[in-house]
Length: 594
Ligand SMILES: Cc1cc2nc3c(=O)[nH]c(=O)nc-3n(C[C@H](O)[C@H](O)[C@H](O)COP(=O)(O)OP(=O)(O)OC[C@H]3O[C@@H](n4cnc5c(N)ncnc54)[C@H](O)[C@@H]3O)c2cc1C
View 1 (cartoon, rainbow, N blue to C red):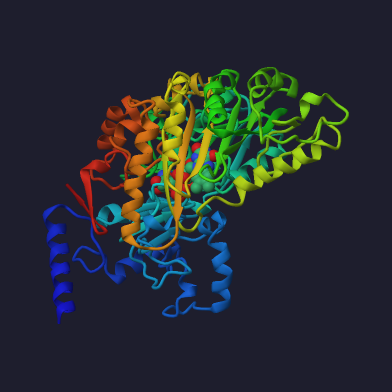
View 2: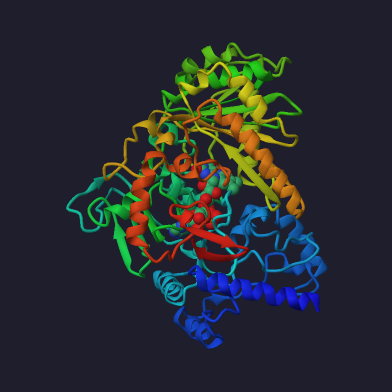
């Protein structure tokens, strides 16, 4: 009786909320399409409309797919990003989908997940889905891989466009002419489907002896990466991924298929290179500038103890100034040692050494003696780490060609492990995640309180430190940027690094989630204390970042909002903490205009 009463109260509440505040339709509401409508729509998209079971249905006996054997296998696959990317609705972080269905959850529902999915294979599938969602007033979601750290690729009660299969590639060997422009852009380029993942695209580039500005993780796709900037090992020298975009084909909120470049649809071209995904349209393809591949020099070493860690940060601007990128990672509460590596593209070991040796000379490393390098210069291997060099930039399969003798095997092994560490496994995959970050400029890392701020940001037990120090001269003055600029956060332009504290935990207790969000505020405040007016990288940030509009887009926000209102007045696209999302409210999965 009580349950029936509560159900009715909830339904009445939901429907009144929908009516009063221009809400998107939900299943059961009067505006939700009939089965016949869905069937017709399925015909339009050539049978590509799916109503998928929740991701871990095979582990739950209320689903037909229940199987103890398959469930045992899924428990392992759930830690693998490629599995989540290949599932129509799964996203990697369960705290953003209402912990709907994991291999170990007590129950399995679709409560935090899209209801229907269009498995898009061609532009017309995307167009049809946008048209259907707009005309039927349905919440629209876009999922490519489900990597998103803010849960922006999973939405309840939605129709989702799954872009994972948009993977066409067309290579332009010598030059590229943007559509409708009377100009030729010299040099190689590639037009790739927005669902392409960096591992596969880099492998193709590698075969052609080309390099692309991409991230450190193979399974991330172009769609989310490029739409907010996108940084990687080449960025400090050549710019962000978004700076390499020459053209975008997209479906607009009104269902048009258009091309945006420096000559036409320039607002889209500007906004969709840094202003966020799922906001102005669905990207179908990106044309990216490619670079002839080059040798790259690399260092792998360690900084140990808070003094050395802070010192390393303070020295980083010297590396950023020559276009070297690097990563620091560590599980600091237990071992106060940070492994870090540095890559200097298009350079030799000698060139990297001349900048790095004076910095690493002050590091004590592990505090134990590594075996001295036999044969070649003793400076190539020592207490603090090792140099190596690879002769082609292709992250899918880096060709490590050592300039050293056998002692360098350990360097190669370490390099490979580092590479595997960031390509096959990521802390917390399949469980819950909160990533707290802030950007530091060359001036910020000289701040007298830097060490204390970093320590406090890592104070929560189980927090991992991950610093992507991938910004530098190339992101400050991107050499290949077209169209007079793009919407990349100005704070990313002045940054040299993006330190982050990452929390991951298991379980589905909402009280723990609330507590973690509180802790994230504390850790974030500590990182922000070094640069209170700065910002962060919207793809790798806490969704509760205060004043997120400014933090994610700085002075670009006003123009982005103007463009959003102009191209999407009906609010066809929405996602959490995306431009214009402040005009919507999510009442337990019911999305309403405020
Ligand atoms: C393990 C891991 C490693 C990472 N490494 C890096 C890194 O090295 N460098 C870096 O810059 N970032 C990195 N990231 C962050 C990454 O860039 C973001 O998570 C990004 O959002 C992923 O994009 P996606 O398309 O793969 O994921 P999704 O979660 O599917 O999509 C992300 C967002 O983009 C939107 N979107 C996706 N495709 C389209 C499209 N075609 N049109 C419009 N909107 C679209 C989605 O709706 C969503 O809002 C990493 C993330 C993870 C989890």
